[in-house]
Image 1 (cartoon, rainbow, N blue to C red):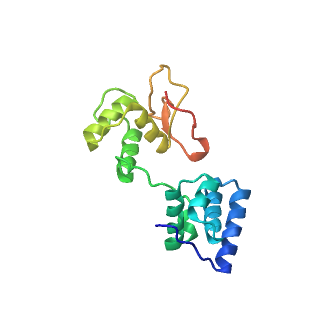
Image 2 (cartoon, one colour):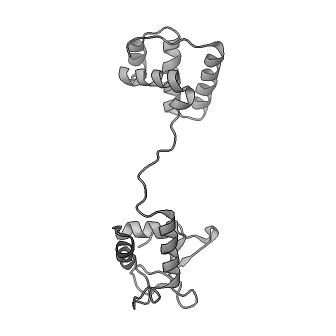
Image 3 (cartoon, rainbow, N blue to C red):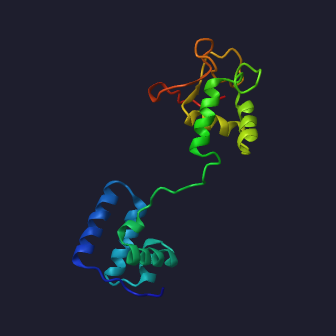
Length: 182
């Protein structure tokens, strides 16, 4: 990209200064640094000098300037990262919650209770997706299922009938157990 400077209008400079002040006040250090780099270059400081002054690799500073030139200030703000797509889609997770709520008997199992290991096998057989026991536990938590302290054994168990045992059960958000599953 070279050592091209950056020309800012009075309004652009004012907006950048306001955003930098906001970033400093709210301790958003990465945004403060990006805006400071842009303002230094706009003030006529060569990119190489600005990168050395602020301890930022020259290529990184050039990238920030190019992003600002093409897409404006919003391109410098970190957003949520999309992350990896879940293996089970929302419909499949809803279906899984229904199966758990109906109990293992209805699913053709004679275990009487659900365990994360049994559910991992069920998910693999039903959807062709492999999950570890701990990931199944996270999915159950996401679905609003929680572990009960009333379980007489140490193994992870899920509620099949709310009146007989409160091991894992659907809950509303107000009573959701935030503890990790065994």
